[in-house]
Amino acid sequence: MEFGCVSAGCPNHWIRYGKYCYLFVTRYPMEWIDAMTFCKTYGAILAEVKSSSVNTFLRHEARRLTGIFWLGGSDMFIERSWKWMSSNTRFYYSTWGHGEPNDSGGEHCVQLHSSFNYAWNDAKCQNRFNFICQKAA
Ligand code: MAN
Ligand code: CA
Image (cartoon, rainbow, N blue to C red):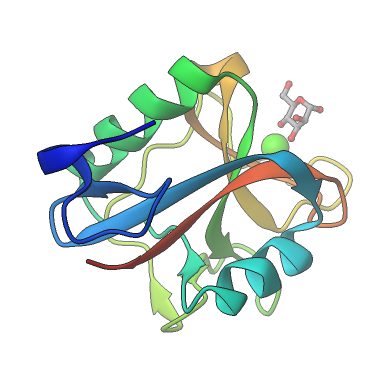
């Protein structure tokens, strides 16, 4: 449970960091596209990580909760052209795990991966993982 300042301006269960509220969904692992739809239902997007400070916050929470979490990045339209999908913007900041992204067997969606100490991995979009929604506080 989050109370008070930590999540001021955010709905119940969402956690505040900077201008945004984040929801870590761990009970309903989903394919990337379904996770995106789930977030949309709450007026949110899959989390987009545009700075190391946001990344540090998210990985800290992900590590605490354990598991692997989808983010809102993909190269599903153009191979190796990684974009934040809500705005179709190229990655400026990125923090890939060692050897990633490797497109192993065709991988087009970004996740925070426990195996890489919560650096990023590209994974198969149709596999089911936890995910993080983001919306404005
Ligand atoms: C698994 C998947 C891949 C990843 C490799 C790294 O095969 O998670 O996405 O690149 O492990 O060894
Ligand atoms: Ca990979």
